[in-house]
Image (cartoon, rainbow, N blue to C red):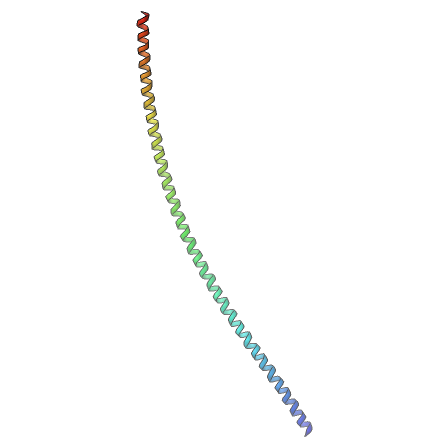
Length: 124
């Protein structure tokens, strides 16, 4: 009976030890599951944030591209207008200069002709 009692006590101690170890493993498994869930949620949130950031960056890049294209178009238009104005101004200046030169040349020729006549009359 005493041997049986000792065996029962040893069995009960072993049973208690196994129950404690199973409880520990169960708590460890729960902690691992909680950690896994937290990590999974965090990764999902990070993935969504990265996706949102990529979307915003793409939208911003498209807006900036459109703005740059509009600016380049405006610059090209303004450059063409300035070039047209400068060309017209140069043509007007050229025409004015040629007109003044022509008038000056005609006056000079007239003076030369008059001087030539005066000289010819004096020589006769």
